[in-house]
Length: 218
Ligand code: AMP
Image (cartoon, rainbow, N blue to C red; front, side):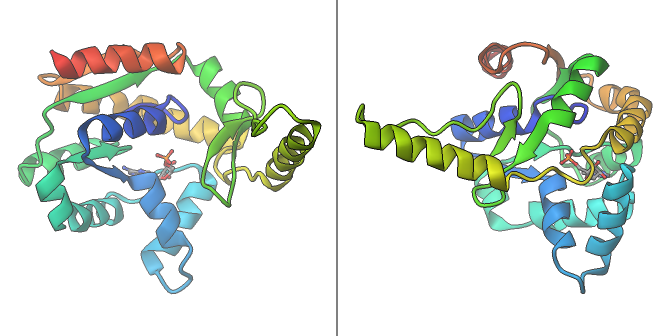
């Protein structure tokens, strides 16, 4: 769990790599559902996301329930990224006995989140996420030749040119998303207090990962 741009996706990727569990990001699932103009829930989600408000609990819960009942989740275990986000979602997990072994809550100051979100960009071809200032695209040359350097520069420029910004990564939508996170944070922390750890997410990726790893090893 964590606010927008607190590093949930990055930590989730590393956890999945380390434990082989199924990565379930409700944000990604909702974005996929949005692509289908005939998917009513997807279209509702699209509107909510553009406004920066949470998607109704009923839609998100049914998506998560359907995904968790698939065999890969039972075999490999699951990692929820961005869910639960409300008291009702946490209660539903409890009701369905979907109890996590561990819960990581990433803590990042608001000013840092704003800077992270407004500079965040996605490469639509690879799905890779960059930050214009902190993590801009950079293709390394294959060797030390001038030709390889020119090719790498051209590839980097091509990535930069096709980067897109998430519709809800604007300052206006972010203000609402942060508000929603603030008002739900206590409920999530309470629901998982027995297995939760608050991790300082305002550090480099490796330092954050080190803390998460230690918590999982404990
Ligand atoms: P994320 O990619 O996790 O930042 O989520 C992007 C947007 O998807 C959020 O701002 C919400 O509008 C919606 N969303 C994702 N997960 C949830 C959830 N668990 N409950 C409600 N809305 C969600």
